[in-house]
Amino acid sequence: QAQLVESGGGLVQAGGSLRLSCVYSGRTFSRYHMGWFRQAPGKEREFVAAISWSRTTTSYADSVKGRFTVSRDNAKSTVYLQMNTLKPEDTAVYYCVADPSWAAHWGTRNPTYWGQGTQVTVSS
Image (tube, rainbow, N blue to C red; front, side):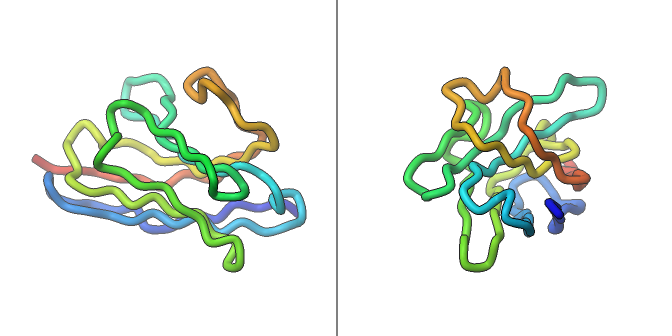
């Protein structure tokens, strides 16, 4: 059965770092592209980052380029989001996602599978 299990969220001061992890299980995700979306209070859902199943391609939202890094370890069935130099505007619920197709514009995408979400709060 397909499942996405997230961890790593929490409270951090501005300028700090967090690493989110998402463990995926089931053959559904063997060659799925993985990524992260987030939704801040009172805001629309937005794309954060994505990585292809073969790890050859990545995509980032302009707001996180240079600060966030998405990676995956297929042997461990885990995708990561390393978040550095965090800002208060990064505060949001972060969702791990999976999709069989790569998207040229992830901001308009509704991924096939979603995790439960993990809260990231950045204090000023």
